[in-house]
Image 1 (cartoon, helix red, strand yellow):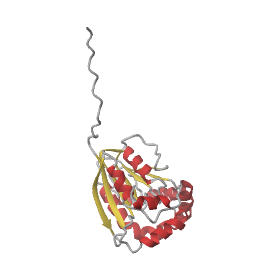
Image 2 (tube, one colour; image 1 turned 135 degrees about the horizontal axis):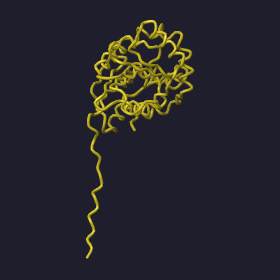
Image 3 (tube, rainbow, N blue to C red; image 1 turned 60 degrees about the vertical axis):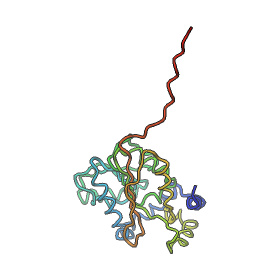
Image 4 (cartoon, rainbow, N blue to C red; image 1 turned 90 degrees about the horizontal axis):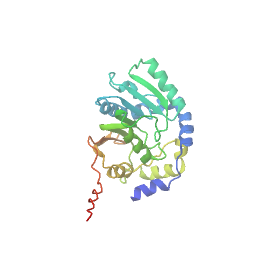
Length: 240
């Protein structure tokens, strides 16, 4: 495990109770606080996901800020852990007549109630830093995406040369549960996960506005499952 991952794990752990409580507080002011800052990443994620040939799952849909950004001919399903956030997303769907949104549901992103290979694309903007177990979440996203489909992430990724690194470490250790997300998030959390999966490949990784603060990541599930080694068939016994 890399040094960055060790630092990440040493901080006080988030749990789902922290996340739900934090986003219940954020819900009334979330759009006002984060719309402008997070819009470029949401647009980039929606544009990438809208190329998929099939239904899209929006994990951590929140108040639904990116829902109007998807192609209107694409079926969208959204899940989130926070009921107050989901209620605002439902109001947005009704208000903006987003008839391509086929369902919104409360779910834990590490244990979703969808069958394997249900979606052509899974998009998860600004969610991995919220997940108490990001690798478990990535495993679940991989489970529900089809072969040939993509996982599209937008996330802040910490960099050692970033002047904010010291501040991120301080916030991560002292206020992460109150914020509801981790300010410090090393690339190794995603990169090591991809390296350990024979069925996943990195398609794109690029910095986004503003100021390269966020990173778009596209991960494809391979069309053909990797071959698994099988034990040789036992030789037939010959009897005298």
